[in-house]
Image 1 (cartoon, rainbow, N blue to C red):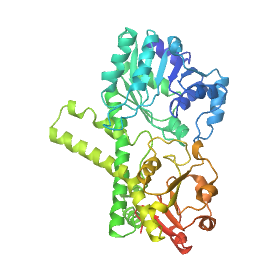
Image 2 (cartoon, rainbow, N blue to C red):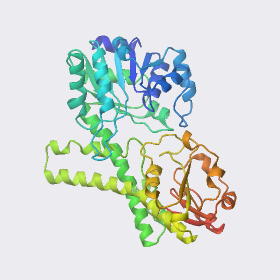
Image 3 (spheres, rainbow, N blue to C red):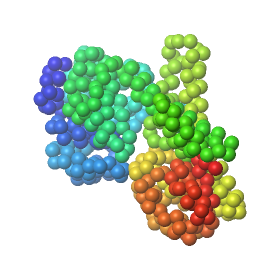
Image 4 (spheres, rainbow, N blue to C red):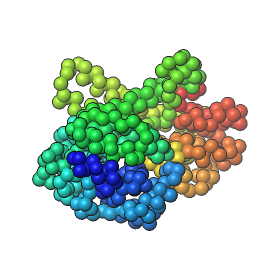
Length: 447
């Protein structure tokens, strides 16, 4: 362990990053920039080709990503699908997707298990394996270590070392977060944690809080579950406001005036997407049944998580209801209507469509309207001409707050639409202005 620590201090330690997506690629590039020899592993051949040409395969707006990838490649960083490079590594960072199953919300660890098996088959003695992927509490003990031990024939803490340092990243803010955010460093032993701190301080100025893997797992799943709960509270208010006929935005504005935590009250929206918030709350409670504690307490925790998810998953259906209300006001039968959805990505100014609320909305609209058109300046499949998408449609539906949509001229839009109607998932367009121009305007939590 001391030998590994010294190699990290001198930047002689070779690093392999498994999974070159929104997390793995920036992490790999920052370690390369810091002076380490870094190799990336990914199974996507197209992605590998782009990276090895110094081109970022990520389409989200990440300031400096192209320069960073190009610079890393010049420093010797390269991508490969071959796990044989693990044989030369002293440090391995695992950054693969860890989704949940659509039906039962249980972890789908096929990619993680496959990566760990391939790592183990090539693992050499003295290597540190760190999982950055978000995993359910208990996964390091119940899956990561057993898989590595079985495939390598070696023992954790004796022949190799294990840690969990969950990523804390959001598209469009990745580099700022990587360089400044505090990290939870869960080493299997205190000594492993110290080595992990020595490693990560090369790429971040944020606090590096040492703990154990289980605490790190609970911390990561809780922070995303907490965020999901805050959004659900705002969305619940929006639904309440729509029922009472009051302006939910005004209510939020008034609540925020109270000093204290009320000031952080979030805004409602058309749904919650992305790779983290829709799944991590389920990961948090996965092991509850097998854990200790009073059954009633565990039931209440699970109920809160499930209700939070149910509210946020309902919001695309709420958008469908608002669309039908708008169509009714412009006297168009839904079966005869053409609907234009603006934004397919789950987050503004990215191409990330994982768990997209727009995709859920499309399913709700299927069979209810004549045609659904989609535009998104960041998602290649939907990067068509915006005017062509809008022309002749009955309602414009704003699903994602891309900067490009801030440039929309509502006067021009009105001339393009067959009927002047807007359903605004984010209250993105000025309500009063739109209504004065003759639009039927419906917003989440709005009247």
